[in-house]
Image (cartoon, rainbow, N blue to C red):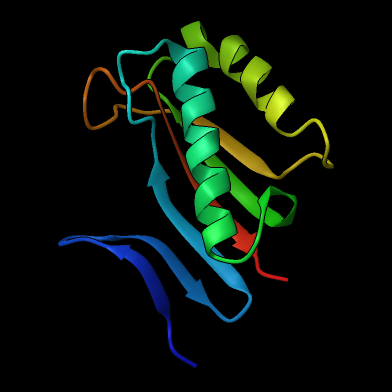
Length: 117
């Protein structure tokens, strides 16, 4: 069985699919001028689109790693958007950490592992 990669770029792929597992590279908002709520929502929309393209959806997420640039400042607002995004499914396994992200305007980045039904 081979690995299928989607949206392959020079240094990475956005998606890797192996068997029944889908791995998403770190996803972030396209418009980094948005506040934490806007960046979070835009990132969730991208994740939804990539998971659908890979043949799955957020209800099949196995784990999410959340990287916040400023966890003290943005954790509560991020969770408001998160709670709305996952309101129709059981609680997802997740880890949330503070991290220095690749650009100062990036407030949140998420990596996702999901099952493919």
